[in-house]
Image 1 (cartoon, one colour):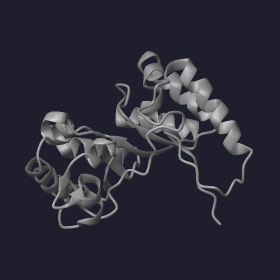
Image 2 (tube, one colour):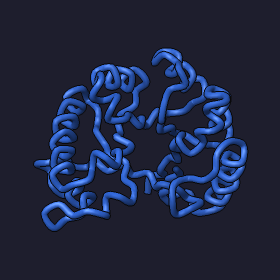
Image 3 (tube, helix red, strand yellow):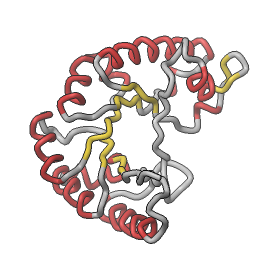
Image 4 (cartoon, helix red, strand yellow):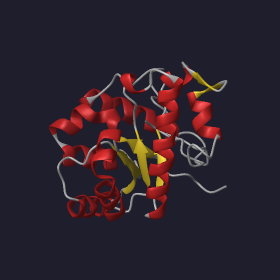
Length: 203
């Protein structure tokens, strides 16, 4: 069985990123991670970030891109991801006011389908990072999560962001900064002691 690489969703260490973006990337590489899912680029140009990733031997997996940014300039977001060789553009969240009714969800599905098509035309894959609220309302007898995952007419197939929300809590990550990095280092060491063929995703 082919060994799966281990990637880190950088939102997990957002506190440390805010203090020192490049230094945190270096620390993540030192911990042994091989891939990065971004949630912001630290003010670096695509060329600067690509050079840094190559220096650290890290692969860009994708990035969380808000609906606001997608609607403002989708092509700009796509071009940045293509420049750093990241295959996934991921919608990270839907504001509460934008998902109050089944009709609102249907509008979102239509937008995701349109956006997913445009992203695919540029050689990337559109994805969606789920939370708990996708299981709070039903659309045509399906939870929103299931509707997105199963109805290819509404949303392209394979859109679900495979990253787990947290490996240390059952809610949104509560650790950040140096504490978060130390906790992740302990978790990584535990995984390294296991069968290297197991699939492990940290977020």
